[in-house]
Amino acid sequence: MKKERNIGLDLLRILLAIAVIIVHFNAEETGRVASSVHWLPMKFLVYGMNSVVTPAVNIYVIMSGYFAYLYMKSYKQVVSSLVKLWFCLVFFSVGGAVFVSFLSTGSVSFLIVVKRLFPLITGEWWYMSVYFATLLISPFMNKAVNSFGKSDSFLFLGAMLLVCSILPFFTKFNEPLGVNLGYSFIWFILLYYTGAVICKYFNYIQSKWYLLSYFGLALINVMVGYIASKIEILAGYGLSTYNSIILYLQAIFCFLWFKNLTIKNFRLNKIITYLSGLSLASYIFHCQTDIGSMIWRELSPSQYADNIKLIPVFIITVLGIYIVSILIEIFRRKLVSIGGFEKIIINQITNSIHNVWKSFYRPFK
Image 1 (cartoon, rainbow, N blue to C red):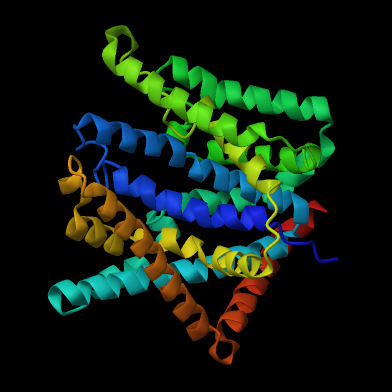
Image 2: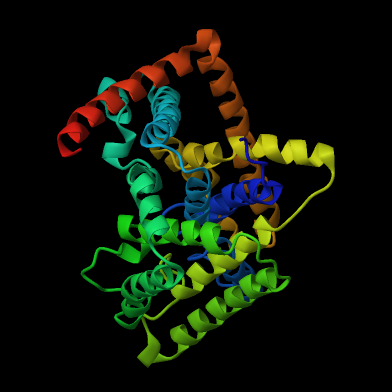
């Protein structure tokens, strides 16, 4: 039986894609706006915006856990979905390398193209590498959630939060557990498990306070960061890492609010649903190694950090990246659908992986 689409979560996917672009607009490694702003009004605007959009990654993984538990895909179905996503990654990876190389030198390096054929191994998109690993074990995590009772589910979640979020905060996130500020497999497991638990136990809870709590925690995040920067004994403490308890709670409140959101306009629903399925391409496109470097080098938004011009530059940059990404993804889908090419390749790769898996699995049955 086909489950009805959740239009609120479709809208959330679009907003998360835009939020990730905003994160990189401000980040030190990319747009460098946050580290370049000194004018106080603009500084509050930039840092306030950061506290609102930074939970985007956590929200997306929680959403993945929610839907993976809801649909209970078989291992073969999970592999098929990942192969389809890998096919998309290779297109953007190789395409980005070819485009930028030809644009800058008029030629294409064969070695770079070969390297771009393996984006997950080379870590071209850190998120995708960890996401793939998490989804590969998702059928087994779903079984764990099923086997736990309610009390055990929350005790396990609490223990994971203690180890991965609360204790690292008191050690200034210098810890030997490999949590790596939330850029890690263990943190994604916790987020995935959170989404699955929400699906199992909180599917019908509604509250008008979710969104207010989300923005309230964002304000706390800004205030704590400001106070810590002014008091020497608190230097190094902060709540802006992916594995901070504040960002974790923000992610839950945001997810729950959008999960319960309904939109009755039929045409708007169709637009949201269509864009939702394309929105992940905005992350893949602007975070591709060659394209990403070129975007932030050429646009250099940090030069406007202390100027009111930053606002129009921000709007044009963020929406421009999103729109271009969507158009490229539409083109890619039309291209790979010619003659059923993508479907044939995905089925062949999936069946090959599944047969290898069965050969390893059979002796343990």
